[in-house]
Length: 217
Image (cartoon, rainbow, N blue to C red; front, side, top):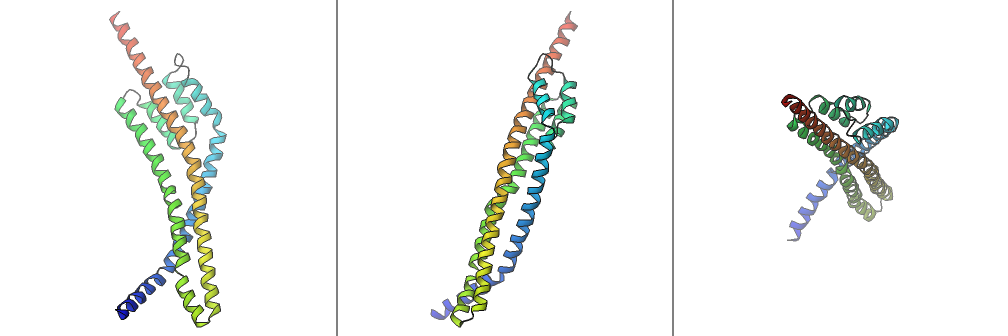
């Protein structure tokens, strides 16, 4: 029984040590990815700030249903920054008479925004988990080195343990900030897109009713 436990412990020890390099590479990849996404978020925030007046103008036109026309909404949509939002608005303008396409456009945009948020949210959880693995894995060799009196190896293992923890938490913090900020942006975009779709459909139905009335006359 003791021999079996010893052999299993040795196997787990080897597996744990073999995971150290992949864990450190994973943390490095996660950190680079988080920094790149943070840079994209800053650029997107700058663009949104620059085009805030166009967005406000679009909302103002949508709030005045008596003066809303498909063409006027389209003009603002072309100038409105927001990536998926601008694309969806322009698609609504060109195919506003197709109610099924309008619904699909709104659903596709919301799905895109949700997928984007989930990719960042994933690293909020993965970062600390990988960091914890990077903390625990070096403790085994560190304890062995401590028993052998090898302080140099022990200090190296402790440095790895502490630094991987810090990097994992840093990844989580960066991705958490990105997720929180973009969630607010995309919620506002979703509300605006849904509102624009409903206004366009309302205007289309109104124009269609007027056209039928004139035909009857």
